[in-house]
Amino acid sequence: MPPIFQTAWEELVSPLFRRPFHEQVAALCYRGKGAEKEVLLITSRGTGRWILPKGWPMVGKNSAEAAAQEAWEEAGVVNGMPKQDPIGAFTYDKELDNGAVARCSTKVFPLRVKEMADEFPEACERTRTWVAPEEAAKMVNEPGLKKLLRRF
Image 1 (tube, rainbow, N blue to C red):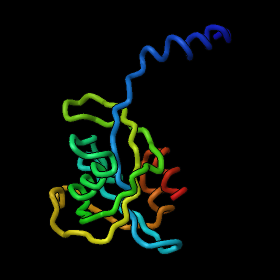
Image 2: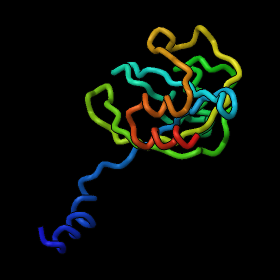
Image 3: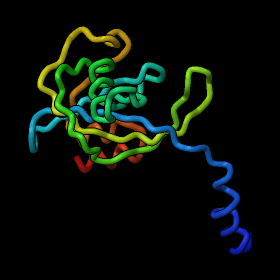
Image 4: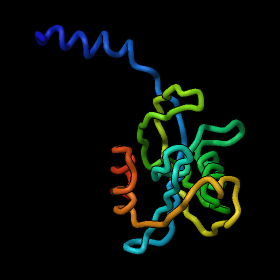
C-alpha cells in the first residue's frame, strides 16, 4: 500500500471502526515488602485464567473504593487500605454475558492487605493465590498487566 494510503488508513479511516474503551477498576492486592512482597491473583469465573480483582465503577464510591469493594467480593480482602492514585492501567477485551466483547481500560489501585476472609461473596466461584510480582506477571495474559506487575 502506498505510504499516503497507509497514513490515511491509520489516521482517518481505522479510528472510525474502533470501539471506545469501557472504564474498569482493579485492586493490586499485596502484602509484605521488598523481596518478601507478594501479590494476590484470583481466577476468572469464565475461563479460570489468573487476574486481579476488578470490576466496573460504582455509584457513591470513588475508583479506589470501588477497587477495594471488588477485592472484598472477588477475593475476600477485609479492610484493605487502597491508595487513592492508580499505579497505571492496562487494556483487555472482556466478553460480556450477552456474548458481546467490550474493550476495557482498567485503572489499577494498590491495596495493602491486612486481613483475608474465608467466606466472601464469590468464594465458591474463584481460586486465589499469593505469589511474587514477577511470578504473577508470568501467570496473567494481558501484556499491560504483565508490565505493571514487573514494575511493582
